Amino acid sequence: MIISRTPLRVSFVGGGTDMKYFYKQTPGSVISMAIDKYIYIIVKKRYDKNIVLNYSEREIVSSVKEIKHTLIKACLDMVDIKDSIEITSIADIPSQGSGLGSSSTFTVGLLNALFTLKGENLDQEELARLACKIEIDICNAPIGKQDQYGASIGGLKKITFQSNEDVKIEIIADNNNLYRNLENQLIIVNSNIVRSASEILEKQKKNISTNIDRLKFFPALVDQFEEYLNNQSFEAIYAQLDHYWKEKKTLVQSSVKKDLEKIYDFHVPEYCHSGKICGAGGGGYFMFFKKEDNGLNLKEYFDVKIDRSGSVIIYNN
Image 1 (cartoon, rainbow, N blue to C red):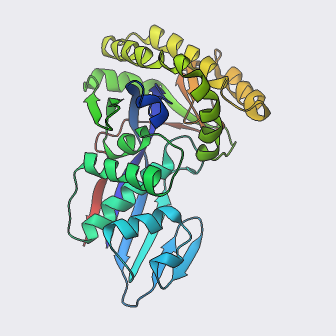
Image 2: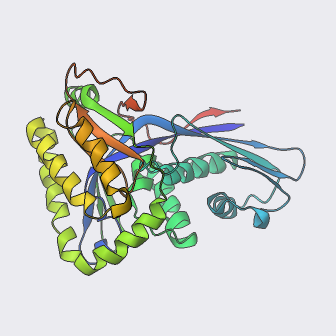
């Protein structure tokens, strides 16, 4: 039996520039952070020929081509496992439609476990590259490339996307003081609005592709935000996130915009300095910088710590 543990992620700035229609014209970049909320993938051999899958649904099939779950199907094809396997996924928090990169976290973790089962050890960047191939090229998901690298590689990092498909990873200020200050403030809050990232990104793509000049400012914001982090200029960080939230919500459907604005306005400025919606923007989790002794007492929020390990195998026997 193999168990992989792969972190979910939050991104601060730069989302959208990891989409191919953007970085093919000009390099994109994001600031991403792996967090201590995980998806676990358990794989084990079976002594019959069945393929048994346990996720939000349960599937029992006799061949890969019968599998309904497109990501699992594509991963098994890639690793060349045809039968006699059981796969189970478990998440620390409700993660479907969360904006925390759950589908990519799932894919990275599954590939890690399956390759380990086959006796192959892939490095984290290769896992991320193959997860991109699965989701974007094979399953045709209209998503970017930040989530796969954000999940596979731990820590706080700047990820740059080049037009030739190269991806550059730079760890930001790996020092305990910055990490401690971030961890003392960061929370994620569930909006309880569940959405499909693929659907939202497909709709946003139609709007953004006609306004590509607007996104060209985002990489500069990323560089500025990286400087703020290195200098621990938190007042500037709060201000930029607030600005980024205002930009992001212009891309959100009007049907949910008011609900999301109510959540943000409840938290900021009374309980939190600032924040933003995670992921594609149509629901899922908010990320906030909470104020000290803010009196916030909500069952829907989680403190977060920075995961430094990325996708790892925690059991192999």
